[in-house]
Length: 170
Image (cartoon, helix red, strand yellow):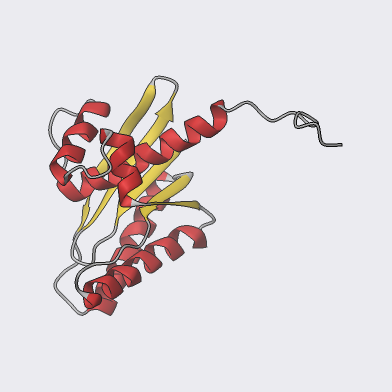
């Protein structure tokens, strides 16, 4: 299973692609997409095209993105919502499943602490994926999303199917 994690941002969007293997997740690619300094609509187009190129090149099975969260600035929240919307639409337009995960769940899955700092997440991503160097913060957040999605999928697959009638119902 190939999972593309995306850490949306209007100025810097991180991405991280992993492949789930029986031995654990294996990193395939990570980096950031930095739109040029321009108006928001043009940055959204740039991000959409960047995601499209990534999806064409890597053909992920799932795209993982953080659920919307509220920022102190209403404008920042609205802008982030637009970025998320464009990226989610870009994945769904290609028929790719989208997994939405809360920032707290991602941090808990990767570090064991739902309130972990970005630096703690970055360190654990490096450790889990056996990277030689720390990835950029935005890319490590994206990789953490991918790792969390892989862990979820692994748990779902490892659960035994419920048997009909096991509850005593007719």
